[in-house]
Image (spheres, rainbow, N blue to C red):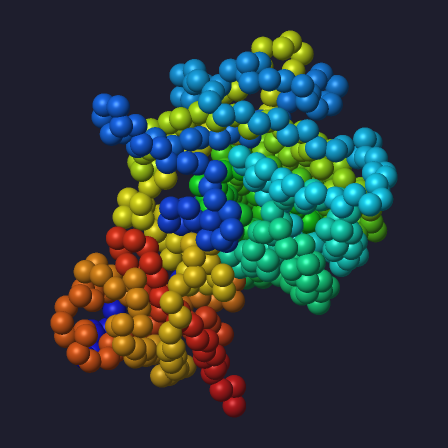
Length: 555
């Protein structure tokens, strides 16, 4: 049975300005993905909260909330001898009784000793190490757009060295890259398999760098770019650079994609208990893209605000970012105000991380990070289980004078997919559509065909898919949507269609399900996606294809 052609969700071509506006509206990124989102990337890791049943009176379901805390003295050195009684914790302003406590004081680099002497004729008895209440998750994130080749190569070498010598064995290690689109590429899922992480890092090559947007601009003081057309140049004074507006437009889109992708990671991580340490290798985002400093009058202030929100989202997810600047040393003479380093420093300071400097000046940056994070405490307390998605503010104090306490500012209660906002559902949709390994979990994959009907819109691209309903598994339900999407090469949505279905109806069990959709686009190369999604659970299926619409014959 054929279904009617999808009703238009947004029809026609989208101008570059409108595409930019649309992308900036949705920059919370790919994750608010269903409950336990990022846990799908961590199959061997629990969330660190236990469900307990209070049978005394009300049959209330409670969970154990675990908070990661670091304490330093006034010189920045870890304080390692505190007890549970030294801490006071507030959840939404209410003091909580601490029922769980762990003190993790690992071997700091200056304290590392040689191997213990071997006692002959006495076989070593292997005692399993106790599992910590909270895991530590270490994520290598390579920015392949805003980076330089020389710095990237040094970063890659340093990351490989650290896997062998510098990371504690209990850490879960993952490897991700950003290549300009709206999703991060997950090359290695966080686990303790160091060999798998090593292979993932080795697979990233200098040829993978995608210079889609300039990291720097010509330093020409005040310039009036000659106005030739709206697509070629600015027509007003611009401080610090003279650059075609097409380059700047593309840079803004890629910068917004970076924020989107990073915020999806933050939203996914917020439901995973434990400390997340993100080692970001990047040149940072140039202030012209964020409307900062001397470029504040060039627009993009809203994108700068989204960047600030991203930093808060990471902090709320208990994710600290430790950026390493991968800019080639030949550009060091350019003032920092005209480079992306300030965005790296901002992200570090607002997430409880630390900017480690340039890759040339900080070859042992990972050892430094280990020193800063090696000593920590875990505080636990019971809270009623709630699925309302509300935010809880956390405050932690230490009774001992002269101590600085570093902790996550808060956490979000979980919520079911059906309670997601429209924006959160769109974020989830894009993640499923574009990512080879969606943060929301692996979708069902099925085949489709995409063909060009004519070189000019409207309705010049046709998508056709045929499948058995049984193939969709848990996606099947009374409220299912089918969404066809058309993305350009920068992952901007060019056109889309949507229809709702009840796949529990008998007729869908009797014949193959056939879905057709027509989309519109001007000449170019596009990614076609068809997503079938259960509106109650978020379970999804996706198919993918690509098309190229030829331009007009110049002859």
